[in-house]
Image 1 (tube, helix red, strand yellow):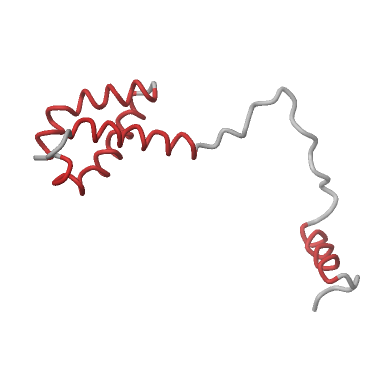
Image 2 (cartoon, helix red, strand yellow):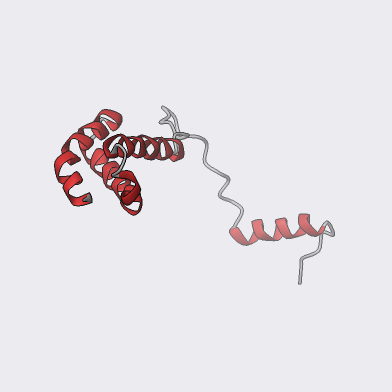
Length: 108
């Protein structure tokens, strides 16, 4: 049964998750998400090699999370220049309306 497998191999799978993430909390989350994906397929999985199957799910889940994670922001020594604060929000919207219409007159 699924519960018996988790009780017997859960700690080993969490250590495997830690080897991937380097963080125990993330490893626990990763294992939980992976077990949630394995549970609906358990009747087919348990016939073959369930630990290998769950380890593959752990790897695939980790790769999916790793690819989605935003890595575009980097700390900078100096802040960028502040935007010009003289234009109000209404003026910005009005100028966009004028440019969108191309007429130079406000949209009614």
